[in-house]
Length: 358
Image 1 (cartoon, rainbow, N blue to C red):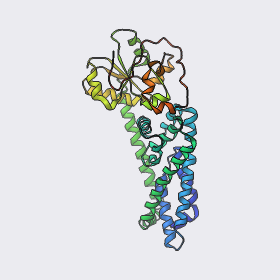
Image 2 (spheres, rainbow, N blue to C red):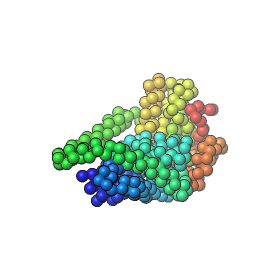
Image 3 (cartoon, one colour):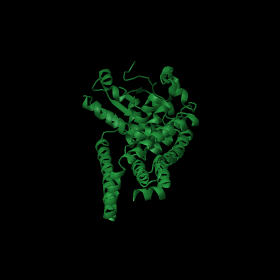
Image 4 (tube, one colour):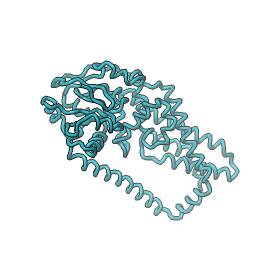
């Protein structure tokens, strides 16, 4: 049964599944590679050459994966941060996938593509991020091709190793017929519904303690001034090099340093540029658990401030702020633009890693 599947439809199945997965479609690319690897192994059991067929499937997988990734790579190169926000909406873990990937990319650069396919969510965001950060197309294709090849080779190899067991499984599924497909469909639907329900519950829990852009602006016109934390990654600040006036760059991984630098009764507002500002909400919750009495995320984050027509401060206004980003800033293909006119800048931003200076 399996060898007939590979012989008839294997190349097309592999190409469209791998390319669809690279484009962000909910297709089972790795299970497909495992099944096709098993089917090729079964062809070997029936006297047909094994290695040429495996090499063909591997080459087709690399071709499909790189072509699919090139679409998002070019999108990232042309539209930058907007592409990241669009592609992040395709992920069930969209609130954290972008920030984690930005940090991976900031540490490893384009080399992250060598292992990105093995880490859920990383590949979907690292590809357009590579384009946004100005990686050369030739370098991208080389690294992405190797990464897709390693990932596809693992899937095909697993299929070859467990070919006999998978053949038995498929024989059982064939006997069950539509009932087996129904079970798989119900299980998948339950998983998606669970992730959606968990997300809705999280948002319902966090939405009661937030501050709007207008409320923050009013606070900034009076004393005492609130502490405003920008918790975007360094890579995101390269792509969008503007801050809300008076912001302090903070890292939620250095929570203890922040706790030691501020008074528990100080008003703290946290913003990011992640979908639904969940990262900001989680940091606000962590600070409240650490004893801070008045910590709230900014509804809509930096995008809401920009849409309200309020002034933003470019990072180039603050000397070493851009220098601290090192090579990442040099990779950014866009020039820094002057901020749009708004209600007026109130304070200067301070570039810190968890501390605030007068």
